[in-house]
Every structure is written in structure tokens, then in C-alpha cells.
Image 1: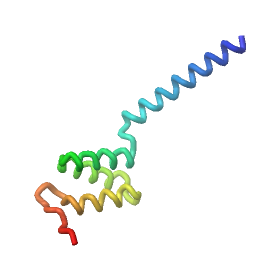
Image 2: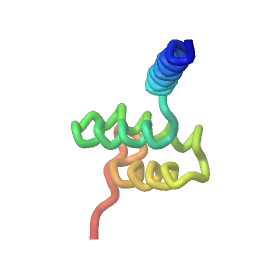
Image 3: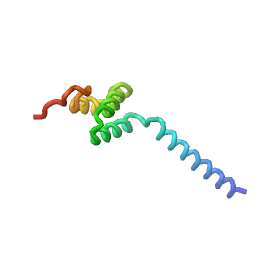
Image 4: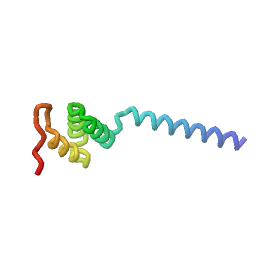
Amino acid sequence: MKRRRKIALAHALAAGAIVVTVLSACSGGGAEQLLETARFEELQRNLPHARKLYQQILERYAGTPQAEEARARLAAIGASEGTPAAAGP
């Protein structure tokens, strides 16, 4: 009987871990996940989407290291579609 309880508990914990993982993946994931997606969009030259994601980071996660990076990337690529990127040194 104890073995069955241990197995049932192990299955319940595993199922709970899967649910948490799926929900966190679907929830938008926070500043770091948004930043990672924005970087990818920028690398793919999808600048309008990258700008939108960087702006979301600034709005939702102000004061975080990710917001500081988002601010820097927006300055580098131009804050809006018609804005040229800052000239390099």
C-alpha cells in the first residue's frame, strides 16, 4: 500500500510540474522571455515587432535590467519605424 501511495504521489507531482511548465510557457513569461524574443526578431530584421516587444518591456518591467537593455536597443534601432538608428562612433 505504501508503494502505491508513493507512486501516486510521484505521478501527481510530475503532472503538477508539467502543468506549471505549460502555463508559464503560455503566460508570456516575463521580461527575460520578452527580451529574448525581441532580440530574435531584431536578428531576423523584423524591426517593427522587435520595437513593439522592447516597448512592452519598458512599460511592464520598468526599472529592471531588461528594461535598460530594451531602452538601449530601441535607441540603436530607432524608436519608431521611420526613425533611423543612432550613428555609431
